[in-house]
Each structure stands twice: as structure tokens, then as C-alpha cells.
Image 1 (tube, rainbow, N blue to C red):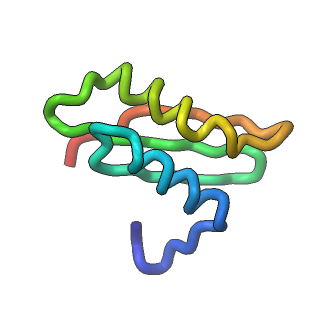
Image 2 (cartoon, one colour):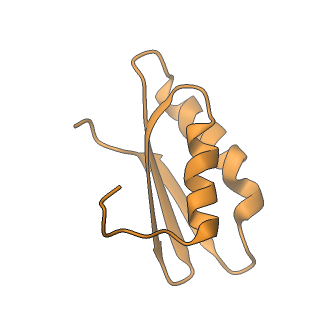
Length: 77
């Protein structure tokens, strides 16, 4: 995360929850109005589609009514 980027506490919690999922090595969260995007990168042994599903399940409790959350994979560095 860039030094100038400050996440709201709920978005910071989303990052923490995503990192708690086994196999996650990088997380990025963006929020623009009622839309939130979560991107993750897995380690070499993480199944990519399963990883996204497990992160989505871990973060599900943070969603508020009327919000749209999208999940995907980050490109390799």
C-alpha cells in the first residue's frame, strides 16, 4: 500500500481478513462510492479460482446493504 493511501477501518479490516486466507501473498482494496474492488495474488501453490472464492467468503460479513463488491486476481509483478 502506498504511503499516501489511508484506508477506512472497514477497508483495513477487509485487507486483514484477506491476508488471513491461506495462500494470499498480496491484497489491494479500492473503494469508490458504493463499489468496492478486492484484488488478491496467491503464492505459487495457491489455486487461483479457489483463492478468490475463499477471500470473498472471508470478507462477506463486511458488506453493507447497497454495496457492490468485486473480487479478482492481481497481475503478477
